[in-house]
Amino acid sequence: MHLLFKIIAVVVIITFVAIQFVQPKKNISGISENHIFKQEQLPENVQEIIKTSCIDCHSNNTVYLWYDKISPVSWLVYKHIIAGKKELNFSEWGKLDKYKKISKLEDIRQELEQNTMPLKQYTALHWEARLSKEKRAVLYAWIDKKGEELLKSSIEK
Image 1 (cartoon, one colour):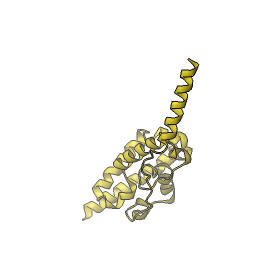
Image 2 (cartoon, rainbow, N blue to C red):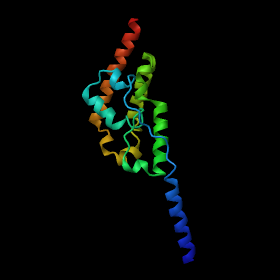
Image 3 (cartoon, helix red, strand yellow):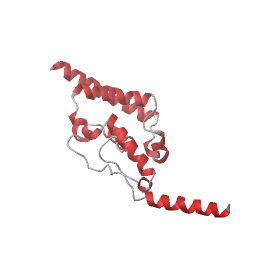
Image 4 (cartoon, helix red, strand yellow):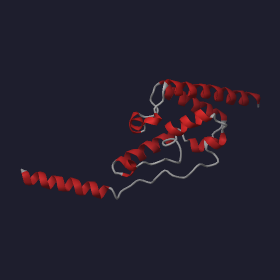
C-alpha cells in the first residue's frame, strides 16, 4: 500500500509539471482606438471602477498575476476571459452602434443588480475589484446618463 501511494504521488507530480508546458494564449494587446477609454469621456471614478473590476475579463488586455501562469488555473482564467469578451469587450466599444451600446449598458446594469459581476472567483483573489454599494451607485448613474445620451442622439438624427 505504501508503494502504491508513492507511485501515485510521483505520477501526480509528473503530470502537474508536464501540464505547465501547455499554456493558453495570453490576452495582451494594449488599448486600441476602439477601446471605451478612448471612445468615451468617462468620469475618472467610473474609469477606475471599470479598470479594477471589469477590464481584465472584458477587454483585449488582461493584467496577469503570478498564479494566472500556473496550469490548470491558467486554463480557467483563459476560459473566463473568452466568455467575458464574448458578452462584452470594452476594447471593441467603438465598433458598436448606438443601439448596441444601449443594450450593453442595460446588460451591465442587470449584471450589477443581480450581483453576478464581477465573478466571485475573481473578487476572491482581487479584493480591489469588489463593488461596494457606493461604486455600484456610481456605475448606475453613469449607465443611466450614458444611455439617455445615446438614446437622445439616436432620436435626433
